[in-house]
Length: 167
Ligand code: K1U
Ligand code: ZN
Image (tube, rainbow, N blue to C red):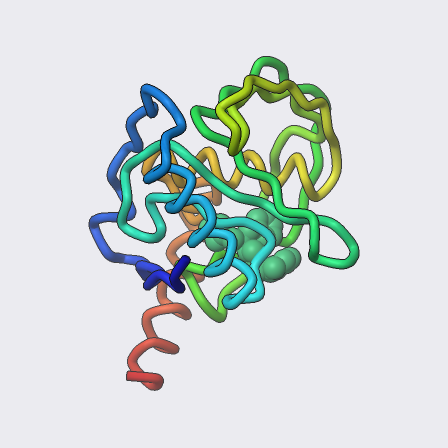
């Protein structure tokens, strides 16, 4: 296991589209385990492969209270979405900025776990938001893309300004 570097917006590699894995082998397991370690190290609740410069289609998530119950989703697919919610989102690839984003309130998702077994999960609230945020990363999208053009311009300006003062 290793702590991986997290790409930061506007790195063009965040725009790559992840490719489905044929099978969950030893190297895919090692990637997912390093992603879990990296997510905990960065104090996130989710992390997608594209954020750590790997284009295998996988994300990890831990929305448990104790932050000790990680889940792994290889080849995730959203089967159903329902309702609407607006949630304040952060992104480990866009440090220092959060925004209210509108997404489905409830999703049914199918994926392969760390053992390569297929599972389905129906979930709402923050976990549903996180799943949609992570699948966006696997499709080359970030939360800025979900905002109105005005809000996006404003937040991107703020983010760039903040990066200039940090670097
Ligand atoms: O994919 C990522 O960049 C991780 C991201 C996931 C996420 C958080 C909040 C809503 C949707 C998706 C994070 O973990 S950001 C850090 C964080 O824990 C957080 C930040 C703001 C609000 C809630 C949580
Ligand atoms: Zn993110």
